[in-house]
Length: 254
Image (cartoon, rainbow, N blue to C red; front, side, top):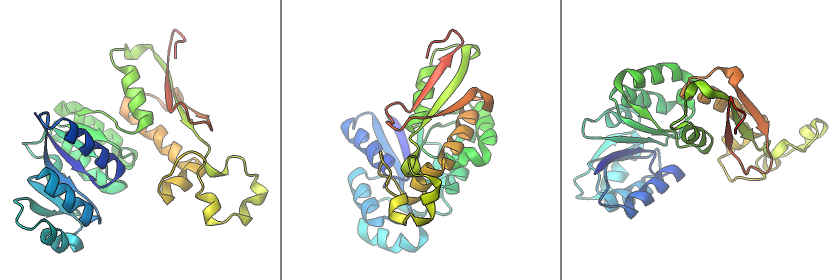
């Protein structure tokens, strides 16, 4: 039985993680669930999985408490208590599915506590990846990335001699602006910029995809996750978005 905390249980990663838990009820126990503002969905998740803890933004705490009624779940403040949840002695796995810098403190807490960490957050690694990975090595924590690009790289490197790694390739779709000449940029509307050709994502990440800022973050993330030099990472524009990442070894195999 693996005991898990899902930080960001109302987002796509969190929802899918709970689907896995539902399929294997004898293998997982949910200890904690958190959300930012979607207290209605969090309340339904609490009723379904009966975690010991649930956390929500402070202004929604009364709503969540009222919605879960007499459940034994303790309601916490998501702005303050995520590091506490990530380092609980009774927790084996921390799924880190919150976005932005709010993930930094719980990520570091989980790393120091020796947890198995499944991050779908790149900002924390961009901000303090060296510190986080150093703490993980010191404590024996295992970081298993969930984002498609980094997850594929992680899986490709399992059982391989790290010294034989030559290069990591990250692919980029090019985003909504790939085939639009710069001369037209001043005439673009917000809706034009948010029409990603392949994915339906949040507004910020869609814009960051078009400017390749998001791919820049992924380069930093990969460098810190896998302890490689930046010159070993190459970004390839791949509009079809069939392949998310590749690993090339010194014998030329990819």
